[in-house]
Amino acid sequence: MKNKVLKGVPICIGTSVILLIILLLSIGFAVTMGSVDISIKEVYEVILYKLFNIGDSSIGIGAVSDVVWLIRMPRIVLAIAVGAGLSVVGIIMQAIVKNPLADPYILGVSSGASLGATLAVVLGIGSVFGSNSLGIMGFIGAFGVSILVLMTSNIGGRSNSIKLLLAGMALSSVCSSFSSFLVYISDDSQKLKTITFWLMGSLSGAKWNEIAFILPIIILGIIFFTTQYRILNLMLLGDEVSITLGTDLHKFRIIYLLITSLMIGLLVYVSGMIGFIGLIIPHIVRIIFGTDHKKIIPIAALLGAIILIWADVISRILIKGTEIPIGIVISIIGAPLFVWLMIKKNYGFGGNK
Image (cartoon, rainbow, N blue to C red; front, side, top):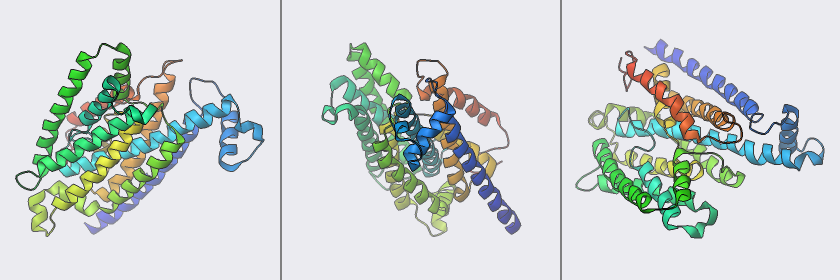
């Protein structure tokens, strides 16, 4: 048993290194790809000048510089943050509720974000936030519903995974009903198109100032959950087993939900609703590397970042002159993978075979 454990550690470290190299190569290739034809030489001249002040100052101004540095690079960095964040939050949510179908939005977060966005677009609530009103209201809705789920699940006794799921489903239904009602009474087709596009997810609004605020929080969240691998491993075993081992999961569950809610709210704010990443990536990683969270959290973060970078590239270049919502691309890729996971006989959630 000891040899098996020791043998598994280098494999995970090696995989992480390989994925990190692939991530760096993906960044290098993705920045050269887009609907606007720019030579690879020009792309890297701009990047070298912006990062290290190498080259002529004229490189840092003009249309080419704006496309590379203000449009493509922010999207790539945001794709890394969103892909890594959603993948890790998906792992945490599946452990918290002990449910293989859990994803970052399972506890009513998606419905809360949808309601917030719908209120912003249809009724103009949050207009004080200006052009960011839709994203900020989505963040408020997502985070607010997460807090309500947590409070509701603790009514009449301490929360557990089942009560969290039931509270999430109930509040999700309420939020969805209100959103549907607002959409039904709205007669502005442009507003409905705006809501639909946001709900499908997009990285087109990536801005350096927002990334500078959100990226460190996502990285800190991933690092924090990596240090919590022992508790997360216990969560997969259940509350009864953990209590017999001397650990009460209740307080950890609350802390983890608050942190994941903050991470999801921020990601919803900058990218809208992007599904499947937080559901599929955790299962792919568990199939290959087992259920030890110490190993799978860093790997899932890197894999999620890589996949979202290329999904964003596809959404930008598949149809010249237009952009497909990234949520559609992810669903097209994710649905077949999900079916494959269901028919695979040698994998069970929690590592059972």
